[in-house]
Image 1 (tube, one colour):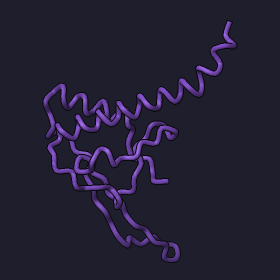
Image 2: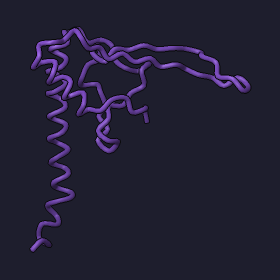
Image 3: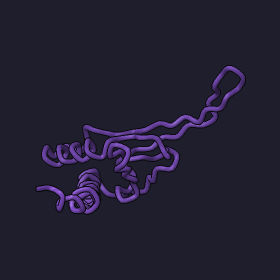
Image 4: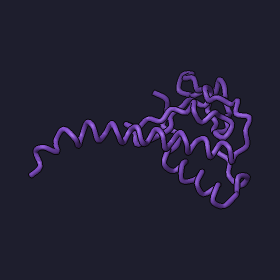
Length: 121
């Protein structure tokens, strides 16, 4: 599994603040990944990758609900083809986040609440 990179909830809150404040330029989320290789007792950098979160398509981000609601990816694999502006990105991300959260809540209710309601007096 790719490393935990950022909390989906914190990113949703950040997007909401950006929209509320009309401030889309004062924040940037950049990631650097280093490819390390063991060489005896040393680590040698064999490659490096850079990606900007706001250049990825929000619908390509993997939300791992089981891992503390984290978006997970390898920087070298992060899509960088988003052509919209940051306000459009923030709104698209929130749309996907809310849809995913609603689906998760429905599944949680079906699995962990509804089957046991009949046992509660």
